[in-house]
Image (cartoon, rainbow, N blue to C red):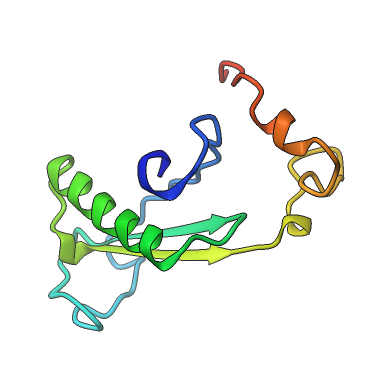
Length: 115
């Protein structure tokens, strides 16, 4: 995402949920496929719009990298990007974090080690 989708390196808010067999229901042929039991769905919420070119480059690069490791077939990679406006984000303290002056500077602050 840093390489092709203009995401800052320290912008790391990720939720990973692995489903048991039968818990993820998907069409094996809709607009692609055939999909296997290795199907992975990436749902990305982005705070700013990206151009069609950036999105296409990201989709291609993600599929290529996932093919290299862990060896996913590109037919098994689905990516959905949802774009939101700045006032729809509150990162802490009940504040609309990206509407206050200087938020871009605070966002570039060094990343604290995670616990």
